[in-house]
Every structure is written in C-alpha cells, then in structure tokens.
Image 1 (cartoon, rainbow, N blue to C red):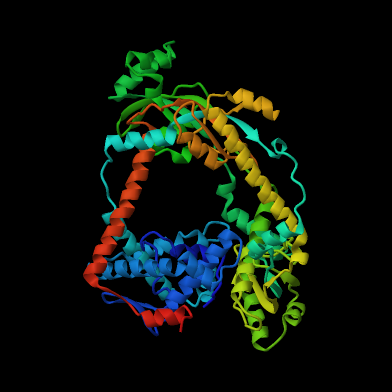
Image 2: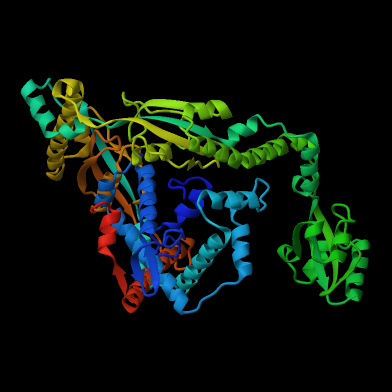
Length: 625
C-alpha cells in the first residue's frame, strides 16, 4: 500500500475522505487490513489499519492546506482523530443500512462509472486500461476490489439522495437570507497609519528581554531535515521522446473528424399541413411573394420560423438536411415532405467548414503521443527503482544507473524553507514531499510518492536537526523588529479609539482626516462578501453590523494600519421570488437541510444498529499505549 498518494491516486482516494456524512467511502478501502476491528456498526466492521491510513491521509491533507507538516499531537489538537473516526462510523452505518435494505446497482452502471472516470482516460479522452491497472497496483488494489468499492459508493449515494429530498423553504426565510446576501452599503473611511504616531524610540535591554521571555516560542529555530530524492516526471520524459511519423499519421486518421469543423447553416422553415399547401406557397414565392410575407400570413414570427444553425450531420430529418444543404444563401427550397407535414426552407446564413491538415496538427498530436508513451514508461521505471532499492543500492547510485534526476537538500523545514528562511524551490510535488519528509524519521525506507502529473518521487531523510531555542543575543534583531511591530499596533489601536470617541461625540470625519493629513475615501457599493484594498474583512463586517451613519474603528486590509469608518448609505435589495438569486438561495438552503436530514438519519441508524468503538485499539493506533 502506498502511504503517501497523489495525482491520480489523490483524485480517487483522497476524495473519499470528505466530511459529507459518508456518501463517499473510506471504510474498508484496503481489504488486506482486516486484522482487528476498531469500530463495529451492526454487522459492519472497520479495521484499525483502515483508521490509521485514513488518519495519516487527513494529516497530510491538512498539512498541504496550511503549508506545514502536521505532527500527531497537532492533529489530535485539531480534532482530526475524532473527525476521521466519525467519518468512518458514518460510512459504516450507510454500508450496513444498504446491506440490510438489499440495495443494488447493475454491473453496467459500475462499468460505465469506471470507464468514464477522467482519472483512467488517456489524452484522447478514452479509457486506458494500463492507467487503470497502474493506479490499482500502486495502491495494492485488485480490480474486483476496486469495483466493489465503486459499488458501495453508489449505494451510499442512493441512500443520500433518497433521504436528502426537501421541499421549498418559507418565503420569510428566503427574504431574510436574500437581504443578508445582497444588501449593499457604501463606506466612508480614513486610514490611521504609523505616520499619525509620535516617533517610537528604541527599547532598552530590559524591555526587550521581557518581551523575549514572554514570546520565546516565536524565536525558536525550526526543526531542519536533510533529504535526498529521485523523481520521475512524465512531462519531462515526453520532451525527449521522438514519435514515429507513421504513428502520428495513424492518430490523425483515427481522429480526423475531431480536427475538422463541418459547414453549418442557419435555416428557417415554414410548416404546412399538406404538400399541396406548401407547393402553393412555394409558387407564390417564385412569383415575387417573400418568405417573410408567407410566414406573417400564417401568424408566425421570425423566431417561430427559425429552425436553428446546424451541420448536416446534426439534422434528424435527412430529406430536410439534403434540401437545406443543396441551397445557396438566401435561396428558398421546393416543398419537402416530412413526418410532420410539408415544409419550405430558406437559408439565411452559411458558416464555412474548416479542415485541419496533418501538418496543422502534427505538433499537437506528436506531443500527446509522447506524453502517452512517457506515461507508459513510468511504471517500468518505478519497478526498476524499487528493484534497485530492494538490492540495497543508494539513491545516488540508482539515479546514476537509471539516468534519473537526483537532488540533495541540506536544510528543509516544515514550511518548505531552508535554514535562512528562504523557500526551497524546484521540489516536485513540493507540499507532499515536505509533508512526507516530516512524517518520517531518519533511516526509514519510504514508499514512493505519486505526483499530480503521474510521476513518482522517492525520498530519504538523511539527517534531522531538532527544533531548538535561540538565545536572546541570537534572536536580538528579530526581537527588536517584533517588539516594534507590536508596540506600533498597540499605539495605533489606542490612537484610533481616541479619534473614534471624538467622532461619536459629534465631530466630523473630514475634520479628523485633515488633522491626520489624510482624506476621506468612500467605497463603491459593497456586499458583505466583498473585498476591498483598504478595508479588511473585519472592517466590512463591522460596517454591516452598524446602522446608517454610525462610526467604528477597525483594521486596515494591509494588517498594520487602522481605519475610522462610517456607514455612508444602505441599499436594501429588491426581492424577486422567481429571480436567479432566489433560486440559488433555495438550492443552498435545500442542500443545508439535506445535509441535516442525512446527519439525523445516520444518527438514527446508529442508534438502531448499535455502534461500538474498541477504545484500547484506538489508543494503540494513536500511540497512547
């Protein structure tokens, strides 16, 4: 089993661990890990290794989101263990419910789901069995096992869809939500920056020492790791692959239609009950009556007679298609007999078709075929690297033997920076590499990490320099900068509060601005969700909590300055029951209610089936025993 998945694997398996009440699956993904039940719901078990894998994966996901590796203690502080456990229990509940209800899904539907999954398609949009098998092998899955997982996922969705159906929300709720989302305000404000303060002198050593002692955690050296890595990137491999001309020609011939745009015609038609009536109208047109005049006589508008713009192959009635594409632009056809009567046609526009030659698309096809060939070689390289590792070869020797990129990074912290705080650039799948490097320990053999581009990265932790506390003298420059930043923020807040008191006492915002050497700025119309270059989200939220013409002091968007603001105007939105905005609100409320209903249903089913958690096993998995 690959512990650290990405790319195709991430799309398939990381998407399973979502906080959406078990509609997607985590429980029992890995059939080999059924040694010990951690959770039992009815007759459905969840193994300890399943929890361990899901928990590790969630830690990696959170680490990528925050840009820093997450330790076990941090993960538990974030509540990830409880969240993952709850998710597994919810999924097991739905699995047990589906089993009791004897729900099923046809083999044809499952096959269609798998073959239409973009994760298993090549660059031509066709299902690629080699891709499919590669993903399964990389994750220790057999095809029957994966098909079983897909079947369970669809069964969960059946239950979720049935339980989550809701009715129309009440109008009073819709109006309240509509106003909350679409009310607009203009805000007048003045920026209070550091220039409004008296100069801040240098602090003495006593003040700095006190500040340092009170904020020691901010002045620590991060843990640094030395790593080596090998990476295989299909995109880079493709650049050196020459595709034979005969393969390019064959690919062009097989996809010729996709490179060509057919001629399209804008067609108008008048329908008649009988062929005789159509012929009479046609004869009149030949003697000078206009097509539009005939339509008007039959009470047909221009939109009524507009059939549309079509390629010949898109037209359902072949007789109509033949007649339409035999005409010149502006010409009217003879009567055409159809299943619904007789019609006369007029061509009002012709869009010429285009044909791309092989020379036009040679580069595009060659690049696509090269990428496919590179993707096909990746698994062979993966196997070769793993064989070399099994024989005890070093990373540098493997890279030299197989002609693969090799790199040593002397210092890497959990944020992807070096010892001087600069970002380490050029890392493949950078966030995942950092996460894996800090999840591991020196000397441990790690499984390959699959990258979003379909390649692999192997890494090895060579050395670990533990986190340590810097002395006051080592950190002195940073301490001075941090003290000055905090002192400036404190004085700015006090200054803004004092000015706010004057505004509330009746003074004018323009007068305050003049004293500050600034000017009053006024925003355009803003909604609650708006962003602004000067007003922080907190400032905008403050403005929407105030009555019109009221004042407040809040934070500037730059995070350093303060702003004095006034609600200049309030505009209530017009509520339209049938408007697009209202429909979006209805859908949002319906989704929320559906989630609540599904949550309640899962809770009821858990009460019915019974849920047990082996606390001793859980403590062991979490390293408490």
